[in-house]
Image (cartoon, rainbow, N blue to C red; front, side):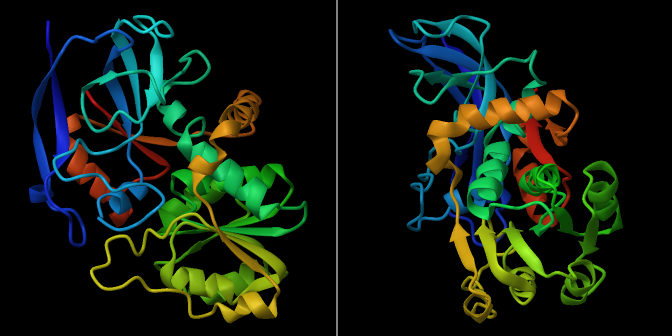
Length: 334
């Protein structure tokens, strides 16, 4: 018996913020799974700033989503039918199955997740790509040392909030950058940052000078643009800058604005390194085990912001770029 799947396909290449006409929301009839395949009912979809870049037909670390294709996304789902030896009906699985309610998979790229370890949305957050990005970006590239100052932009977001908590675990002074007093309060009071600079209501350069008297030893950037420039101007000797994302630039209709203060890298003998989480795939299990342990000990919190209803995908995704979410944004399909 065939299964009806509701899905969003990319209908046009967005210019600026995606519009409703850039999407085709409809239904597909899926066949029964064949030998070596399984049918997954998708329950949760990860919404990430990187999705905006995947819509552009430009060279990148991953091929763009093709016009007419189901929009790429990380997902959690439940196996409904299986003709695959490694998966059973009722298994919870994680993988890039896209923005749809059901999917047929050959099992490649799918991993089982345990809802007894953490709620399913957390497997898209701290125990998913979000957590992997924070873990390897900060610890492998940033190499923070106890007593050093770590600054995180997008501190109230999915990756930034985890980065700051990991830096505190390593004994660092942690300063966040976030938009608005509520988000700054969340970063300090709930996530344990030492301070947070409200970029919407104060001068970032002045705030960094005040909160980073020893300058910045590690800067984890999720934002780009003017905030990256302000951080570069405050680097310490031998600082490490991690370029994780540039959410301020993703919907630009003109060319991307690069840093004008890059000579600070020379003066301070600093490094600026781009990171893509997929490079660390062989070590994901290692990171997940360690972070699950910290969560069990109460040393690491998972903040998820859940929107319910697959039909709300376009508005929920755009909310990432207007600062509507706090923590990891997850779309619950139904």
